[in-house]
Image (cartoon, rainbow, N blue to C red; front, side, top):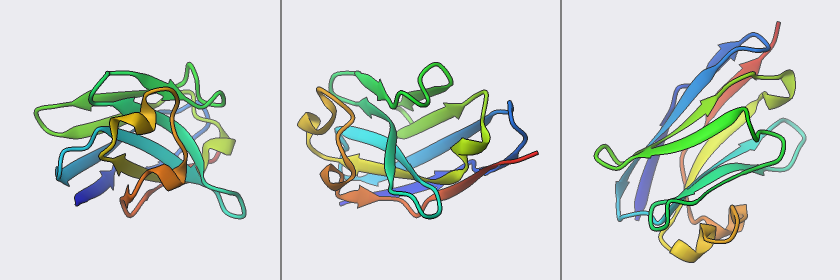
Length: 126
């Protein structure tokens, strides 16, 4: 079992920045990813990081603006959101998988991640 707690969401103007954190406890995760879901839209992958291989993957829509990183000592994964746009507005979820294969070749999809946090809201608006 993995317990995930997200923090760091909020409201920001276009062009602003936020830093989201995902604190993991319980079993050791092999992959942690961030997903987001806007009202009326499907959940989409944003970024992932492999604790086993160190590989990171990003959705095309956030490449160059978002950055995912891990703090092994604190067992925390952060997502730095820069140059935020209105279309980044969504509930952001942290998800974990115990299998290193989940994120070795790509980000994986939502069903590949059995463990989820409660989400943190990001709102980008002027």
